[in-house]
Image (cartoon, rainbow, N blue to C red; front, side):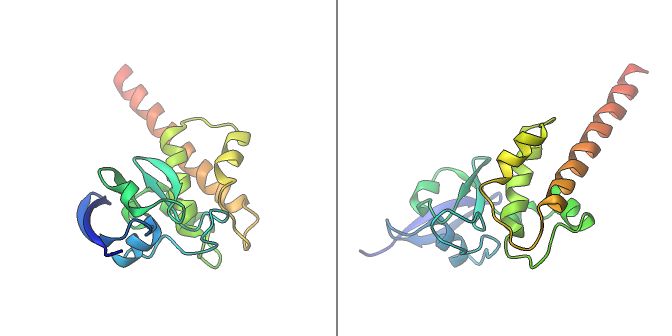
Length: 163
């Protein structure tokens, strides 16, 4: 089957990519030069390829590229200015780095969608992603750091509006 040219909305920009109906979103993104999503297991077990599709974490190795047409895709490269990215650095949540982009993406979604998650909820969100180098504690610390910072910013805003 010959590829068709499709337009994907990735990290706030429209990009054209040649896709066959069987091409995964992972390979489409890598063809666009976006290498943050990693080809780990390529069967949905490791989470190294995690991206956001309309704000929801998905494994790009299990998502067809054509499924992303008319949707918004956010990769690790699109989260350069995200507080979770800096929190990973500050909390030493990076070891070899292979799984890190997938964790950054899923943790960004977590702190964006859940303002006060319980420990069990954080564990549930992290479960689809595997890391063989850390004990996950540093990753959890990064999540807590962003949540604390957000809560402090909200309290500061509440105090200013009350004055």
